[in-house]
Length: 349
View (cartoon, one colour):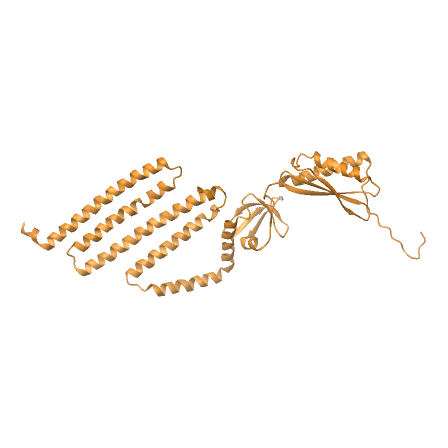
């Protein structure tokens, strides 16, 4: 038993004891995490907290064991060169474990925020950007992990960072238009001037329902069943009309002309009755009939009514015009026909 009195043997045994203790502590921590996850799953309505605990369970357990390895390595009678290499290895493994835990946490957070959070349920988050945000955050964490490991190993990372900066500048200049559309997509997602399903009108006159708000472009489907693809940067710069907000109701203006000499009170009464007769008008708002123009051949009257839904505005217009035509024919109200009289000098009439 004299060998036990050797300091080197004693330190080696202490190191092995520390390793064994850290292993048992890691196993106990893993068991404790399992119990906590089970309780959280029963209490919580969402799966965010139990998924988060499950994601960091192994990295935290392994990290505790690495701490024990580090303490054991410094107590063991290893040569200084070996101890330094072992420290570097443990540092690299520790950074990898932390990076893995952060990457998993970021992915779970993005998925929860874009699908289960209050903002997602209120329609304030564009779920189409979830994969992009997840990959972007993962790339940043991996880059930081690599830089930290290289710096610990004695590699000069300053030149690497400069090279990455120059490369990023070159890529940014080459893909300037794509990046502009990408940032415009982020702006549309945050500002939310329209949502999927809304009907919008562009400055060029196209009207359609928003189908997809993508990272680079937005697609709308027109009433003619054609798809218009608009770059996001155009939607950010130009003005557009959202016909779905604040409500789906839409004001419809219908012009009708009567000949001079027509009883305007009767004509306005006919137009008001025609506007009330359509089933596509909003019941909460009374139609209004106003005189808008004294033209060359007749008097122009305008009906202002509210369609209950913008998708039925053309049906409301059609029904009102048909009712006006029938009532004008029944009452003998004349619709003016433009007539132009030409007088030629020197010709007897």
